[in-house]
Image 1: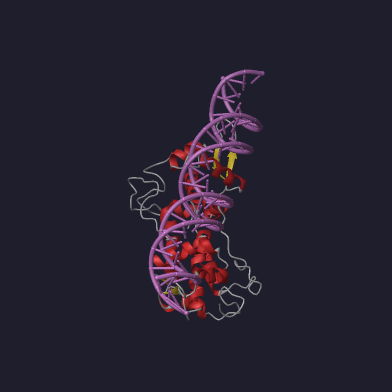
Image 2: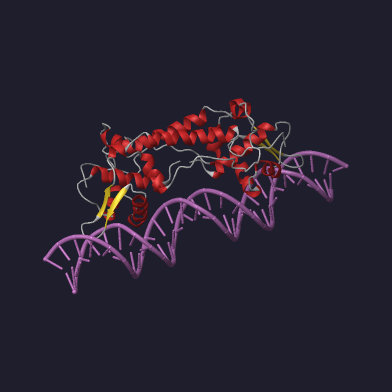
Amino acid sequence: MISQTSEYALRAVVCLAQNPDKPHTTAEIARWTKVPEHYLSKVMLALAKHEVVYSKKGLHGGYVLAHDPESLPLLNVINAVDPIKRIKSCPLKLKTHGANLCPLHKQINDAIGTIEETFRTSTIAMILNEPTQSIPLCESGKI
Amino acid sequence: MISQTSEYALRAVVCLAQNPDKPHTTAEIARWTKVPEHYLSKVMLALAKHEVVYSKKGLHGGYVLAHDPESLPLLNVINAVDPIKRIKSCPLKLKTHGANLCPLHKQINDAIGTIEETFRTSTIAMILNEPTQSIPLCESGKI
DNA sequence: CTATTAAAAGATAAATATATCTGTTTATCG
DNA sequence: CGATAAACAGATATATTTATCTTTTAATAG
């Protein structure tokens, strides 16, 4: 439903949002979010390429969020690593259907649209600010 | 978002619903739905195992729907081949979270729930009966 | 300028999902 | 009964996703 890779990306971004003080290395984030370190490094690359995070090389480098959590929808994170794609034309390539989806594919496409909308309207800030016993990702506190 | 396999299963079930007169072979369904025949055979097995369809061996055998389209939600088809699974406990296995999901995973889980609900409340009959120019799956008519 | 740190890039491996192929079993018909 | 049709089962192949490992490039501190 939502890929492992997207999960990892969301964890990393939430982690950075929780710790906005300074850049954090892939190794730090990986430890914190329990994501395989070398795989996370690819994920971070993608996030940087899509300007969800900003990367700083060299000593004291690492990753920081490129946006305020308030203006960062979950969808942006997901789409950076594993884009949600709507159905644009008949998957069976039926000529008479074309862009005019049949009820089956319209239904599926609408469901995808709903998910997309959900993740578009919910921001990282909303995740951070929701009152809860469970601090996102962590047993307690900060990195 | 929804796997290829689920797509195939839905196509097959819609195809059977459109042609309730007699059993249809995997080969027929595959031709009609443009699903790879040998792969479809596995998909049909799963649908039969979950009693979404009924299988009849031997000459003049094939598959027929096991239920009225009115009482067959898309979710049942999807869950037969590629179950939608909710998040039940913290994917990071944090002891302090456990079944008490943090806001991130609650959000993701809710999104999955929405999809599940969408597919639970929409039936194969609704697909068949929706007024449209595009007959589901086909250029025109029946098998 | 050199040593160190950390991202970036590339190559490889393992796991899973998708797809194909071959044979076996079961039912139907003549 | 024997021939045939078709589901069922198992083995193999291909593609994609997930994961690991190694090398290179860039930035910083001393």
